[in-house]
Image 1 (spheres, rainbow, N blue to C red):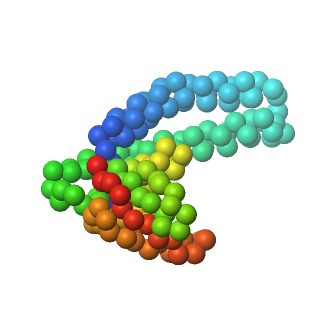
Image 2 (image 1 turned 90 degrees about the horizontal axis):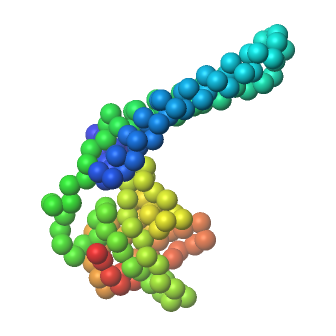
Length: 158
C-alpha cells in the first residue's frame, strides 16, 4: 500500500529490514569482494567467466541494497489506533469460510511488502485482501480470482 509514495510497514518489519540491510552492507559486501578477488586471481579478466559472474552477482546484490534503502526511506509505521473496531483493516487477522467447499482459512492482512502466503500473510492489494477490507463478521464477499468467482463469509476478526 504505497499511498503518497509511502510504504506502510509494521515496526517489526522495519527492524527486520534494517538488520538485513546492516548484514548485507557489512558481511555481505565483504563476502562479495572476496568472491571477486578469488575470481580475479584466475587470470585474464577478458576470458574469465567466473569473474564476470561474480561482478554480475555484485551488481544484483547492490541493487537489492538500494531497493531496501528505498523502502526504508519511504517507510511509515502503521498506526492502528484510528481503525474502526470490528472491521477488517490492514493488520487484521481474519478467519473466513469458503462457501462452496466450507474450508476455513486464516489470513493476516499486511502491506504488499510484507506479504508471505506461506505464513498466511496476504496483501491488502490482493484480490482476497481487497475484498475483505472494511467487512465485518457475518459479511459475505465475492472475489474474482483466476479460478473464477470465490465466495467467502467472514467468521472472525482479531
